[in-house]
Length: 100
Image (cartoon, rainbow, N blue to C red; front, side, top):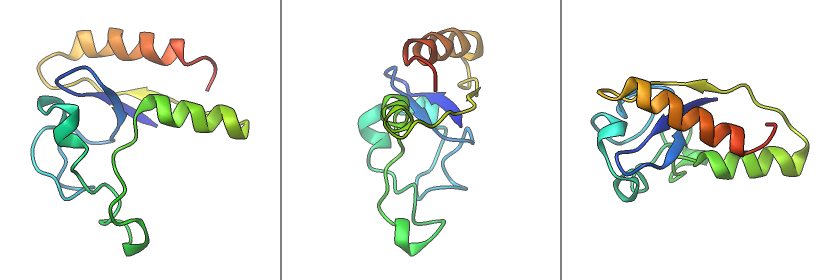
């Protein structure tokens, strides 16, 4: 899973820097606050069955992994303009989730 960081510090899953390819949003995800990112439909591009799915937070995915005994491979994507800080913050948050 690929982790990104919102402008106001929420850590969420999104593979691309930009929202256009895998959502109905527009722009650089890391330049938006979490409340704005919550309005993005991150599932409809894939299938109508997933229309309206929000971007998931790291904490939500970690909880699901723990609940179902699953493991995850984490990739940290640098947020445009704050790459080093993104890496540090996201790595620390991922470590605090326990083994996933």
